[in-house]
Length: 492
Ligand code: AMP
Ligand code: ZN
Image (tube, rainbow, N blue to C red; front, side, top):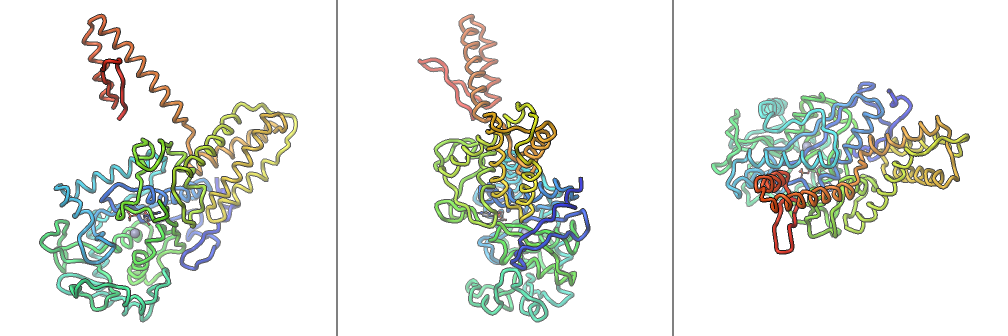
């Protein structure tokens, strides 16, 4: 259904710093690129906040009937420590410390990332390209930038000439930084840098003898600069100009600023029409970040194995917590906030469940169409999920009034109400209705039953059956422990 024809979205564009009418380059089609994770460690909940918001954007665009090509990359090379042009590659460093191959690091954390996304009910992107899968294209782009006179080689490394670019273009257009000010803010490490000017950034770095992730190039055996992969992969899969580019606010500078400079140099065109940036998730009033150790892992929240929360929470509750805040506001993570979200989530799901049991009335005391329109208005206003959720709670009120027989809906209205509510809750917000408490109680009951059957088998000296029960439970991650007081179990 081409709902996008009657739903005109406004998008806050970080480039113009204004909400703008969203008009895709090709009617009915949207190209969206989101910077993906650097797979040198487990994605933390802050990373998930950013990816979750773009999951919502993707879901909503699909819901409106757009054909969306959503590209989210995996950074598996080139991202150095401190986002700088010097220092060790994050992945290579992890490989060195753990004495494993860099590609083992990449594999381990890519698998973990996908596991988190599955647990948190993310839709997979249309394409998930990797930096190492596009080395050839990156070398070609560097050649093109050199040909255009905006990059230079020194000792096997190639740098983008920011001052030269800034003569005709605007370096700082996205981040608002001034090239002059950048001189004072940019460190050259003990004069080691080969750069002409401190503002310049690396397109290719010559690998020193310790650097194991290296590829041959016309300039040296080395590796691409971090910013290059996103210019290359967005152009390759979405074209020289595309609709939406997203990421966290911390990527605006230097990463996205450099992307614009690289892409614009090659094509002569403004690469992205709408830049969207999410604000940061905080823990203890500080940005959640791997480097400072101030973070919680998404799967630790589900298992309850962490020092921050009083208990385990369901993924859908965490999703709900995230979406209760506007993506452009900072969001503080805490156990209390999650508990409050859990209450709200339960209330919403109880109402959604009850709606299935409601019988149609003779008259409608509630204007379903008006309510549905206000839900769309919220999403059309720069994907305003907290306002949408407030509207969903208006629906909860109505359902509770119907429960108390203080309100009613005719059959067609009831049908429309259910369809719209389910659409917003499950398809657009991606919440799920699995009652995790219920299912863990059921698992406990089943294991207790098996413990009883095993005890009977042992009393009958049926050791084969008793061992079979124990061993097959181990395969399922359930460990039985025989003790004086009887048999207990733990779930891994
Ligand atoms: P990285 O793997 O560090 O490149 O980060 C992946 C994505 O997560 C980027 O878009 C970052 O901007 C984003 N990000 C990192 N920390 C946070 C945070 N605390 N809150 C929200 N987004 C974050
Ligand atoms: Zn990127």
